[in-house]
Every structure is written in C-alpha cells, then in structure tokens.
Length: 421
Ligand SMILES: Nc1nc2c(c(=O)[nH]1)N[C@H]1C(S)=C(S)[C@@H](COP(=O)(O)O)O[C@H]1N2
Ligand SMILES: [Mo]
Image (tube, rainbow, N blue to C red; front, side):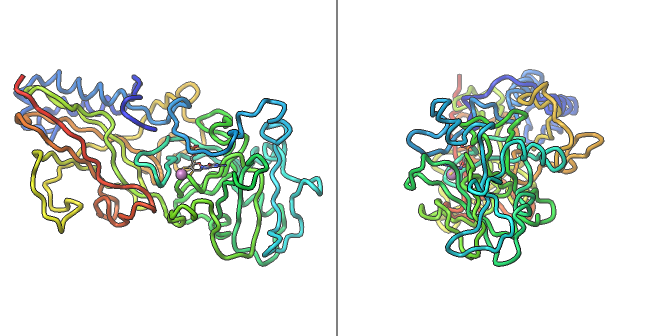
C-alpha cells in the first residue's frame, strides 16, 4: 500500500523547486500560513520540502500492495511446475475461444487444441508494432488506499480479439487466470466488447499487460501476462491470464459480483494523508503531504480542514460540505521517475507529448497526484485533520458516488495534538 511508513527519500526535483519558489515569494505564496513570515521561514520550508522529497511516484515492487487468492498461490510453484502450467514466459499460452453456452461466431478461435493459442513469441511480435504504455493506479474497490502506482505496458486486447475473426453474436468477454485447475479457486472478470474495441476520448486501451515500471511482470504482480483495464478497479485486471471467452451473454459474471461489489464502477476521486505529524509543539510548522486518486471525473483540488476535537456537526451534513475547508497545494508531475530504470520515463507514453516526454495535462485520470501543505500558527489543542478532493466537475468527496461497494472514498480523519512544549 502507498502508506506513510514506507516513505523513502527520493528526489522529486520539480516539486522541490516548486516549494523553493513558494519560499522565495514568502508568506503570500504559502497562502495558508499567515505566521510564516515571522516564524523561522527557512526551517518551515525545509520541513515541507523534506516531506515532499520523500514522495515517490511509481511504487517499487516491495511496496506494491497485493490482492490475490489461490492455494498454493500460482506463482509459488516450483519452476518445473510453473513451466508445465504455462506460468513462465516460455510456456505461457492464451486461449481466445467462443463460449460453449452462448457462443460468439468466430472463424479463427485461438486454442491449445488447434495448436494456435497465442504464445509469448507471438505476443512480443505484436508488441513490436502495437505495444502501448500508460500510467494507471491500482486500487481495490474494497481498500481504503491505493495498492500501487505503475507505468504499464502491453498490447491492446482488441488486437487479439480481431485475430479470432469474430463475425457476430459477440457482446461480452469473460476472462480468467490460472487457478490450480481447481474451479473453486477461479478468479474471473468480464467486459463489454464495446469497451475493448473502442476507447472513450482520452481513455487508454484495455491491454494484455506484460511489463510494470520497466520490468517484465513478476508472478506476484500477475505475470507472465495479466489483463489491465485502465479505468477500472483492480478486480477487472485479472492476473496469470490464460483464457478469454467471447460470448453472446449480455451480463457480467465477475467473481467480484458475488461479494456484493458494484462491478460497473469507474475509479473514484479521493484524497489520503501520507505524512502528517500527530504531536507537535505550538511553535513548530507542520508539514503535511498526501496523495489523491484521480478518478473518472478528474481532480481540480485537494482541501484540508483542521477542527478542534469535539466540534459539533449537523447530522444532515455528514460529508462536512459546509465546513471551512482550505486548499492544499497540488504537486506538478515529477521529472525524475526514480522507480523506473535510470529514473527515466521511456517514450512514447500515452498522454505524454512525444517531443518533451511531459504529460499533456496534469493530474491525469486514473492515476495518482501528490499534494502538500504547511500549517503554522496552530493554537495549543487537540484537533481532527481531514482531507478531501474536489473533482473536475466541482463535486466534493465522497460525492457524487458515496456508496462503499463501488470504491472506498470516505473522508479521512487523523488526529493532531499541539502542545505548549
Ligand atoms: N487471478 C487473479 N487475478 C486477480 C486477483 C486474484 O485474486 N486472482 N485479485 C484481483 C483484485 S480483487 C485486485 S484489487 C487486483 C490487485 O492487483 P495487484 O495484486 O497487482 O495489486 O488484482 C485482481 N486480479
Ligand atoms: Mo480487489
């Protein structure tokens, strides 16, 4: 999980300069800091700069959160068994066939039986001309915080669908990964065919994904090949992918539907704290940093609200819409991408200008943005500190979709005590 205890020192050059610039313009620049000009200005800015430098954009392998099932976990087999069951790049095969119950009409299904299932070499051959890369945050709709942030690479799934020469009666795809040949262990998801064949404006394609952050996918992350659905919560991105079924069935049959999850939910916009002091002395500036998941409706700002403990709040305003929220600073896109090989973003990446390799807009949908704020002059007392997002439609978290089973987006609340000494 992207959590504060896991921060490592990493230089975020642009953001550091951003805060140095704020320091140069003084208290007016750090808009929410009336006392800063009198406080130790350098030290305050340093504290914030340190918090910001500790942020990292892409999640390193040892910090990526995992949601998985299987006994044993498929990637823990001994290597001979991994080879035997197609869990290595050399032996991996993907079948793309018609649903026996509600068959789509295919002239050229790809099956092991016919000897034409898609293998690694053919996928790599397709990748030479068709591969795409894009940024996407991985989040479980049932998790309070994102699992990890990645640069994912793969071949658009539609390229493989077209290889099967579909003719008619194709409304949906069901797909699942290796599950120890035990039906009880299956993990399955599905998509409408329209989402696979065509991308809404600004959206990226659904891919057969084989790389994350510049490296081939590990078994833990779903390798050799996983599905990657850029605009969906994690359960649509099935790991250890081995079979796609083209069906005329019109309904979702996702494993996650059985857990009372909303399986048609696009990613939501919400904010979380990363580093924040829990105890401070009254004269100390309080550097705070956090992340925002940027959902389908984008992100216009992140806000915070510091309220004395025990503040009464009207029951008919459960989302604190009338509280005196103040704006935090959204951080710009990084220029150093340290988790990637050589700290460099490869080119091209969808959504980035191929000449400058900078994002054409920021923050980007279905990705991560960082934010920070420096609090000063907070009086002695015990406080609740909350953060929230305002999406690009101007709607404050957790609206417009507050129901938890379509993605957790409750307003987070942390405690802060400011002491005399
Ligand atoms: N084969 C398989 N794929 C799977 C899962 C699983 O249990 N088995 N879990 C899903 C869920 S619920 C989530 S949230 C994401 C998490 O991806 P990650 O473990 O790479 O972070 O994987 C999805 N893909
Ligand atoms: Mo999940």
